[in-house]
Length: 244
Image (tube, rainbow, N blue to C red; front, side, top):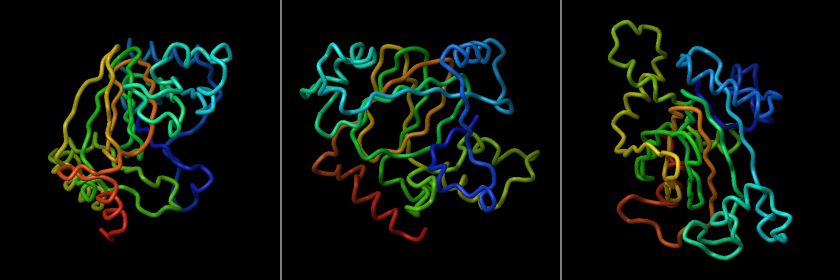
């Protein structure tokens, strides 16, 4: 049930083992049926979980509105070619990404460079957010040629196992990083249908789907000045350049 985005062209199965996710050919109807099943049976983390996504290219906002897809039409604050409260800098907008998660899926901790607006369309997700200054505690993958660059492959669900005397087989390196990660200064919130969450540039976020749900987000532009208290681009860059 642990989802990590990665560059599949760079993932070497012989040296790295199986990739964290696999693509399949499900359409939305098939995925939705399984997501309802996951809610009904409270699907355990040991069973396969499925994630579905669709996106709108950034160029669409400059096309005539009659040619827009339903996503752009239904989310005009995200697709507007003019600046809005939700789209700070349309020329730097990265398009609209819509992600459909089923109960129990955890999305790996990572950061985005653009200011991120996340709209919960249906369902609910738990967001754990940490400021840029906490970067060194989060086991973010540093090498740019690594397939999971900018992500952490730590499953935070394992933090609860650190003090469990029944758990004897956790790798020492994973245990060490989880001990470090649980000291992270972070905040959390549950994003529910109809709500929008703002995630500042370079803030780390770990996401858990609490039920069948749909979420769309758009990113646009990087602030000119970093936040001196929480850190920003320079803080993360220094962290990524370190040898921790």
